[in-house]
Length: 195
Figure: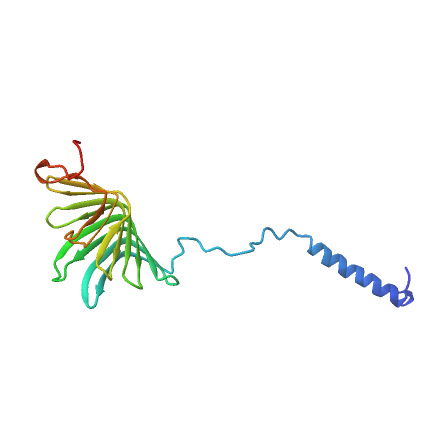
C-alpha cells in the first residue's frame, strides 16, 4: 500500500472532492415528495366559531332585531359571519316583536348590520301572516326585507305569490313584482282569470 505522503497533493484533493460530491449526491437523490406552491385557506377555517350565537342589531340606539344561530363562523378580514340554522326576531319602533324569520343558512355583515337568509326562509308575524321564499335580504339602514326570487305570502284566506318583493318587517308597506293570488273572500286579484 503506498504511503499517504507519496500520493501527490493534487490527487489527494481530487479524491476528497469526489468523496464529498458522492456523499452530497447520494443524499440529494431522496424524493422529497410533492411540495405545495401556494397555501389555500379552507372555507371552514373561520377566525372564530361560536355555538349558540345570539346578537342584537340596533340602529341609532333602537333595537331592530335579534339574530340567533346554532353555529356562527366569524371571518375578521371581511367582517362577515356565516350562520347555520338561524332565527331572527324583528322588533318595531316601540320594541314589540313584529316578525320572526327562520332559515337554514345566513350571512350577517358587521359593518352595516345587514343580513341575508337562504334555504327554506320563512317569516311569520305574531298575527299569523306567513312569507316563504328561498332567499331574503334585510337592510338595517332602511329597515326593509326583500327578495328577487319567487315568494308566497299567506294571511288567513288570502294567498299572494310574486317574482320579487320589498317590505318592512311588519308587512305594512309591501311592493311586489307580478303579484297573483286570491284576496279575502276568494276574490281573485285584478288581471287574473279563474285559477
